[in-house]
Every structure is written in structure tokens, then in C-alpha cells.
Length: 121
Image (cartoon, rainbow, N blue to C red; front, top):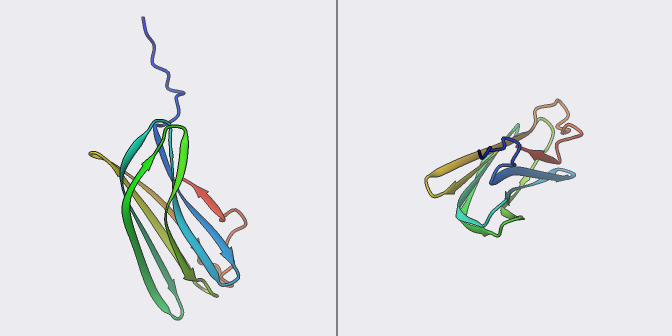
């Protein structure tokens, strides 16, 4: 009798990655695949702050070989005192859709939490 293991990692994982240098934040998507897959992605980054708001959206196709990972989309936004940032990565493979979300900010001085450089989702 064959048993199916529930400990097997997911076939596809996405995450939002963020890096900050001063008042600038770079946000991008990352896709990790256990097996070769191809599909479409859409990265949406919204920033809000005392100076106003902005929204950046990037989309395209991707192909990632099994056991590999790739970066998809990249946005650079200003991030000052009182700013907030929200990011959503939509990954579509055939009829399956996956969303990964990340956020940054909301503190009085605009300083991100210490663990916010990379968010695994």
C-alpha cells in the first residue's frame, strides 16, 4: 500500500523580498519551484506617506527549472518618516493562483522592524 507523505514541500513557493537603503526601499518577488513550471506573475507595490501615495504594477511571464528559484519584478520606492508600504505578488500557473503579501512601516519614525528585509510567505 502506497502512502502519501504530508511532509513533502510545496511544488511552488513565492515570497516578497524587501531591502532598504536610507529612504529608498526595493521590493521584488521571488519564486521557488520544486519542479519545472511556467506561468504569469503580477507584482503590485503601494506606498503611502505624508507626501502622498504611489502604486507600481509589473507583470510578465516566468519559467523556472525544478529545484531553482528566480526573481520576478522589482520596484524602487521612497520610504520616509511615517511611510507604509504594501506589496502583493500574484503567481498564476495554469488555473492555479497563489498570492504572497508583504508590508513595511507604520512606525512613527518610519523605521522598519529588524526582520523585515526579507519576508517568507
